[in-house]
Image (cartoon, rainbow, N blue to C red; front, top):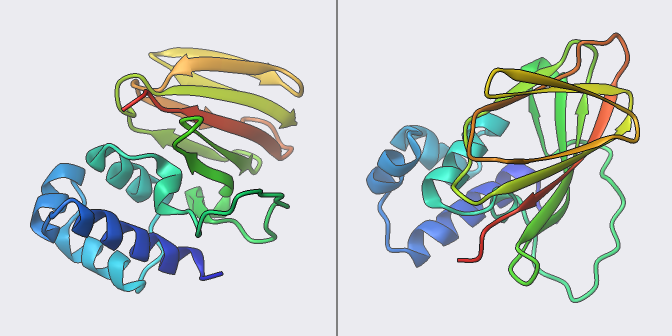
Length: 185
């Protein structure tokens, strides 16, 4: 299995070429510079969560379609030791468990938020639903100016087409399970 930044680069290049898009056109659609896209495709840089979401949203694809490895008929996974992507100086770590599945229209990942960690996401495409379960610790999510504080064992579902921020205001790490459900193409 390749390093995550190599996989992201290969997947981005494959999707771009399948669609017959130039780097210039992808840069316009994603609001990520052509130079950065070129570096990502070559595997020269590890993109941030924010950059991967910009690319996914701009190309109207799932987040995990950029992270996934080759498909397998049956998958049993154990969370990796190292995160696939980090944000907020390492306080936000994303671990892909199951990449986007065109049959279920879902992808599943775990996010660990260190004490004081946060991640703000730009809106996803229309019809995307997020389902979040707090596995350990406490977690706050801000949606449309409203804050929802959740404890271990609680869950929330919301339309992902609005800006939203994941926050851990506590002094303990929080682990959340995220299921992204995409609309039928």
